Length: 136
Image 1 (cartoon, rainbow, N blue to C red):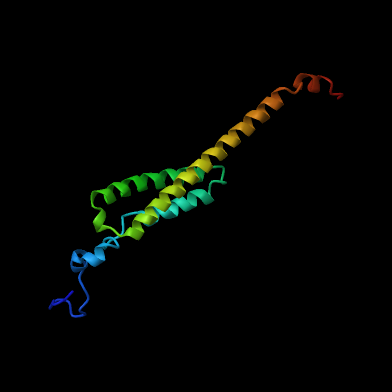
Image 2: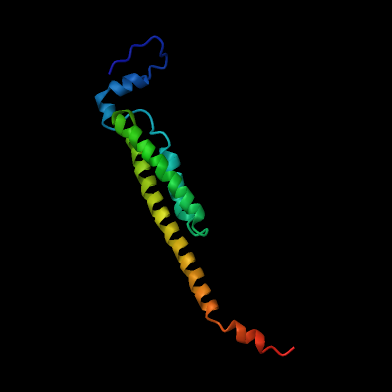
């Protein structure tokens, strides 16, 4: 690839020249997918924060899945314009978000079941007999 550009004194290929190069296109495009790194970070954080009563992990997982769906639509519109590594980050972040969302939901359901079991156990106690037989 011969580069003759007076406006490019470093003799490096411009992004348009890189995009037109077939050898460069086999590795993907020249720009990252928007929010692909954010999706990965939020997906990982949704897994690590699922033990915070499930609420924080649930919120982060939902946000990550929303951003992943929007970024996937952008990628599918023009897949050759985006880097392959960015697409892999997007897929990994989406998988992490699904795992974090599932774990957070499971944790919330366990807490609800625990509260219901405790409520049933305390309602079965003979509270009236306990307070009547108190010697003052």
